[in-house]
Amino acid sequence: MTNEHKTEWKAVAARVTGILVILTGVLLAVRVCVASPPGDHPIPSIFEPHSTPAESIRHLSHFVLGITGLIFLVVFSLLSYVVVKFRNRAADSKREPAQVYGSTQIELAWTIIPILIVVVLFLATARVIHAIQDAPEPAEAVEVTAIGHQFWWEFRYPKLGIVTANELHVPVSDPTHPTPTFLKLLSADTDHSFWIPQLAGKTDLIPNHPNGTWLDPHEAGLFLGQCAQYCGTQHAKMLLRVYVDTPEDFNGWVRAQQQPANQDEKEAAGRHVFESTACLNCHAITGTNGTGRFGPDLTHLMSRNTIAAGAALNTHENLRLWIQNPDAIKPGSLMPAMKLSDSELEALVRYLETLQ
Image (cartoon, rainbow, N blue to C red):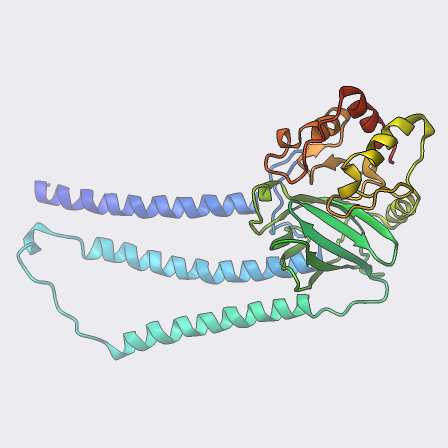
């Protein structure tokens, strides 16, 4: 083989290798999206739905990926053919290639086919959006008002008289006796986005513009969510946890949340710290003079598994650190350091730990 031919095939090999690298990257990206590694903290994936809205989104995603995958395959095949067929040859280096000045058939094809593809994708997407946004609310539905704050979630159950934060409890929706959860989405400050990948799609929370979504989980379990709209310094730690309970467990949770705050006289000193410091300006605890709404309601704080919107487990050490120095857990959070003495801090933490 002459040096010219070797050079030609090296160039072809380099181009084909580049294309294969791109193809491998695409396949790896798809693998990451679809796979959910085992463990206590799996990656939420839209390809593992557990609710009707999420299933609709998955079907749409598969449809879109199928069409775009076919387009990629056609373009990749044509590109590979052109790279090999029309590679640079030493014999043609001084010869001008054939000049093509237009083809009506080709121009019609590459105009009409993309238009048809876009129309099909638009109609499929519009159908799914309509089915989710305009779904009728049955009488048995659980109503929740979700309010996005910097940087935590407030959940209100108006019909049940419950106010909680960061951890949303909903019942399983049995297909024979559906009990969906309809959420009214509000924002207290800036734009947020409510997203639980395995239960529902992203829905924005916009100040002065109520929005809504719904979900009907098909099985009990814990599902992780996230604010999907950049809303400030701690956007990445504006997490939420959705506990899908069996009907019995959900009713038990409701009864527990409807109880007044525990008033343990042994921890009166800690309650006094809460009522005599800036805590009550932001937080509420039923039965006390704390009625603040800038921070989470603490009436049943210890019924939650996490604090700081999922940034830390709800343990004695983390609760103490969160009150003493919030930036140590969540830099940039809007909760101020309380600057309490050691005795006041310990008394306050012991009191909060009685709020079951």
